[in-house]
Image (cartoon, rainbow, N blue to C red; front, side, top):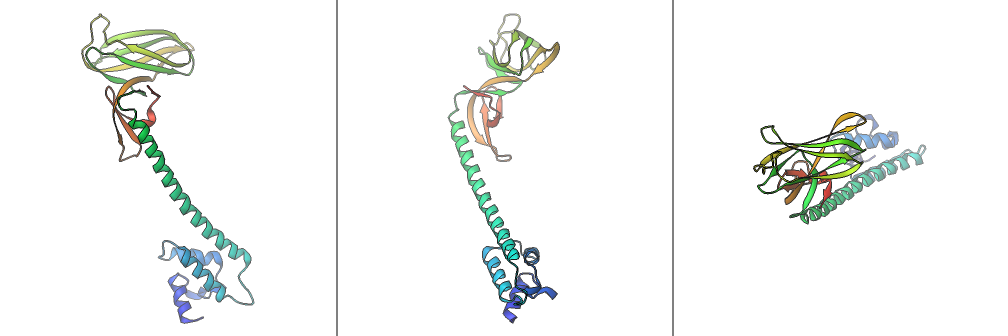
Amino acid sequence: MTQVDSDYLRSLGLTGSNTDASNTSSTGSFSRATGSGQSDLGQEEFLNLMITQMTHQDPMSPMENTDFIAQMAQFSSLTGIKELTKSFETLSQSLLQGQALQAAALVGGNVLVPADSAELEEGEGVDGAISLESSAQDVTVNIYDAGGQLVRAIDLGTLSAGLQDFSWDGYAENGEAAPAGTYTFEVTGQTDGKTEAFVPLLEGEVQSVFTDSVNGGLILKLKEIGNVRFSDVFRIG
């Protein structure tokens, strides 16, 4: 073995008593080359390593075909993973751009999202819905002001499974218009003889759309509700 070849093998991490490629297994040389200060084994280094092994192998005991195939499989897997990672990054960017375009078209429109509070403006009301997995009886929407006082109880009676809409006209139990402010919604009903609380879905007008710089994804700013994730939208329109 020449000095150049020895220096090259040493640069790849093949030092010590196993410097001779004929005494080095395919998997062993690969792991040492990648584990001794060299963080990545590129295509050129890999091919040079294989040529060096084949040049200096013992003619009486040449490298087995299985060893050669194993090294090729390792390199193919590494290359494939890198290409797959790039493809997923491109796909993720395309999906995010598509979502951004779709969300931008919602500005000025209404969406239905899971929320238990909404801002009431003077002279307006609040629309909402309930998603039921099965039928429920004595369904009631209780509306509380910022101080926790019950302002209005809307009796929806018996509802079948599915999405059921409700609406609050903005008036209190005494028939007077409720003052502008933040109100909390609580929905309860009877299923199989037991009282159950349901997640209220409230409707809000989309004012703007922006990207979540911390967790990724898109955020919708709703006029009556505040910021919600685009992925949480239950219904558009």
